[in-house]
Length: 99
Image (cartoon, rainbow, N blue to C red; front, side, top):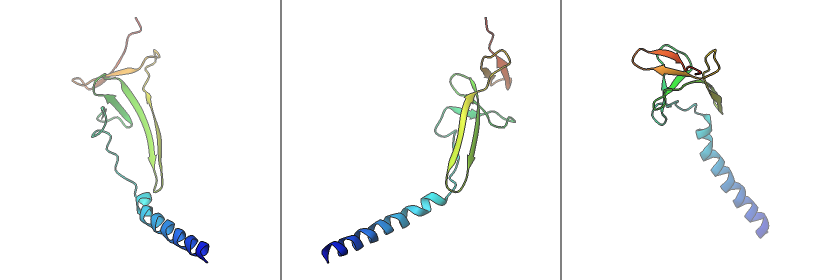
């Protein structure tokens, strides 16, 4: 009888833990990249960001659903095969010279 009672108590405790953690899994969350990173969104350019310190441009794709989020980030490459830099003052992408 004691083993059966311990299993019931364990099942109840486990159920309560699962119910408490369930609401956290259903929210989409807030994308706050700029508050906790050095990536800054480039105005007028979808999915393009530049690093505040290095000025290297990155492309970021992400998707969020109710239960998960996924995505990737990569340097945004110019036709010469090198990453773009972002000129903050002129608000334009600059190719790094290969020389």
